[in-house]
Every structure is written in structure tokens, then in C-alpha cells.
Image 1: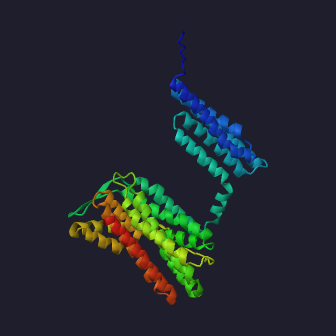
Image 2 (image 1 turned 180 degrees about the vertical axis):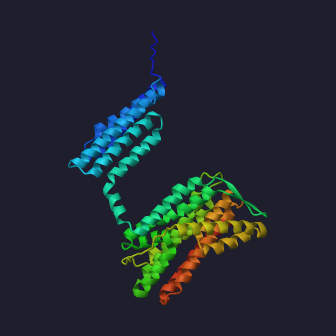
Image 3 (image 1 turned 90 degrees about the vertical axis):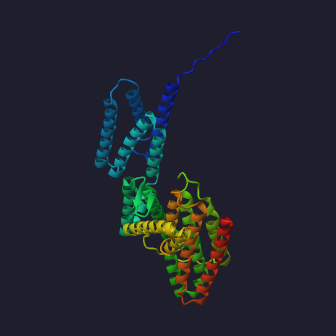
Length: 430
């Protein structure tokens, strides 16, 4: 009886082979769209470029070969890309398309190098995003050409806030007020500002595209962008068309639901991975407001109606800085009120700030909860109080309408929302 022992390849060899194969596969993936579009470089060329980068990278990492070999390979790809671009200028192929192919070849080289160096997730991410940009060419062009000057300015400003200012902020700092030292997380605070502004931009685009096709889009998504804008638009609809009161009321209810959903997303999302327990206590009361709003809207609205929704761009540098200022003031005065008057002082601050921005009051409560200055029940109550005051603001705006049925319905259904949220809050507290 003989014992047979099989010798398997060493781990590093296996890993190297896998990385080379993955680099070639990602190159093929990148070249697939170019091949489908019948460009001068396709699947084989892109795959070979990625394989070349992988081979050169492995030689640099695992042998005495210098880094000049990897640089030389990149220069060869650049030269080939330049030749393709020149061919596009002098030939029948569009110069822009040739330039895109040239840049894509360089990206394929970079993907091969990333994968061979062990940055697997990064390489796959670059390949997928690059392929997506190539496939969505028409949609991206239509989106860019359709932007107004104001929308383009808002997009650029948002990019500055999200990708320029955010990395420059410190992760942690303190605000010394003499009588009180408040721990702050500037990056987390700014990320909340960016998140609220980003929600507004995304849903502004949705409302602009589908605003006239259904109350669910105009009410709910409009409420995510600007719930006050929904009330103003519905007031104008009711003034011009009294018979529009049914779906106008539903739109305001759905705007309240969207506002509560946004606050819930902030409360839960920004406590995940923060070192503190996830603020699950906020799910029940805010979820009750959302469900009651949807239930009433579903039962009372005339869904055969729809109305156009015109919103101004919900984001600007001024608005973002204003939100940040409100948030900081709420945070400071909330901390002072809690120190001097206990939890009731912060509750009063939450109610007052909710009239201005329920998102700002919510983020203040979350930051204080993350810092250990508020417990989960206290933070949840503060968030709900800010949500309640926001609902009351919309009710007061609707009360300015001359249509008695419209304003009475908004008031009555808003009371039901408040009752539902209050009962859910009692469940949390008790």
C-alpha cells in the first residue's frame, strides 16, 4: 500500500495566476463596449493591455526588474492612444470617440496594474465604473445638455462641499464655551449637511422628470427635496382649481411622510458604526408618522388627478452654509439648554429649531447622542418633536388658503399624524 502525496503549487503562485487571469478578464470587460460600438480597439486589444500591465507589475513587485518597465508600458499605451486620436482627426471616425477609446485603453492598463498589485476591489471598481460611463454615453450627454445654468452651478457647488471641503475638516475637535466644552465631529457634521443637500438634488431631478405623472412622485419626492415647496405648489393648485383639493391634501401628507423618512434615515444611518448603539428607538415613532400619512393619502386622494411640480433648485452654497449655521446654533444652544435646564431645555430647542429645519434638529440630536450627551429615548423624543413642529408649520401654511375644505382637511389629517406619532412615542418611553 503506497501513500501518494500530491504537491500543490505554492500560495503566492496561485494568487499570481489568479490576478493575471482577473486582469485579463477585466480588460475584456472594458473592451466589450468598445467592440460592440465597432471601435478601432476592442475586446482583444483591451485584454492584452490589461495583461501587459499585470505582467509588468508582477515583474516589478517580485523580481529585480526596475519600475521603468512599468512606466515604459504605460508610455506605449499612451502613444498608441495618441495615434488613435490622430487617426480620428484625420479619418472618418469621430475625434471624440477616438479620444474616449484612447483614454479607455489607459484605464485598462491601470486596472491591470491595480489587480496585479493586489488591489482587487479597487481594480474591479474602476473597471465597472468605466464600463458604466461608456455604456451610458447617450444618457450622460442628454443629462449634461439638459442642465440649466442654475442647475450646473448647484452641481458644482455641491461637488465642492462634498469632495473638497469634507476631506479638509478634522475628524474630531472640541468647542470651548467657557462654561461648557462640547465635543464635535466636524467631518460627521459636514457629512450630514452633504447628505441632506444630496437628497435634495437627487429628488429635485426626479421631481423635474416625473412631476406631472403622479401624486406619489410629486408629493413624496418633492417632500424630500423641499416639503415647504410642496405646500406652496399645492396652495397654488387649489387656488386655480378648487377641485384639486383631494390630491393636494394627499401631496402634503406624503411630503410629511418624506420629511419623516429623511429624519429617520439621518437618525439610523449616522448611528451605524459610530460606536454607539443604532438609534432603533426612532424607527417606531417616525415609522408611525410615515405609515399614517401613507394610509390617509391612499384612502382619501383622487388618484386620477396629477399635477405638475415646479421646484427651484434645492441646493446652493448659501443654503448649505445656512443649514450648517442653523445646525451649529441648535447644537450649541441645545447643549447649553441641556446643561442649564436638563433634558427639557434641549426638547424646547428641538421644537423651536424644527420650525426652521427638522433635519437640522435631527442631526443635532444624533450628534449629541453619538457623543453620549443624550440617551436613546431622549434623542428619539427630540427628533420627533422637531418632526412635529415641521408638520405644524405646513399646517399653518395650508391654513392661509381660502379653500375651507382644503385647509380643514390638512389640519384634521395633520392632527392624526401627530396623534399617531405621540402614541408611538409613548410606546418607546414606556
